[in-house]
Length: 136
Image 1 (cartoon, rainbow, N blue to C red):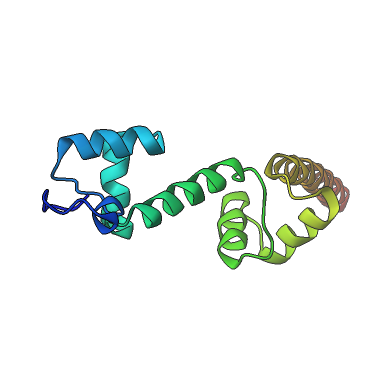
Image 2: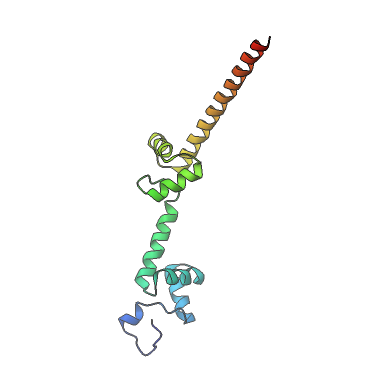
């Protein structure tokens, strides 16, 4: 549906014209998105209906798979390492131990932090005891 209304062939049907309100309404309804999201997608990938549809499918897939950590993707390793404030190696080890679920990995790191905090606390107590003995 290009700008030329006299052309109604297949090429015209494969394009999204944002200047026409009826087209925005049609494509928004077809892809089950808001007009604003449709306009943003067209701006990002172009006026081809096929490309816009692929873009929305990818977005839905990513939203459904957000809670999983894909170690094979470097950008995911960077993101989750930064989020959990750990090195990529520790993140990979945690995923190997508890699985790809971000909630399980987060719980894993939380328990590790508690254990580390306890160790530090006992170490501080031991240091205080030895310094008291030396002073006496």
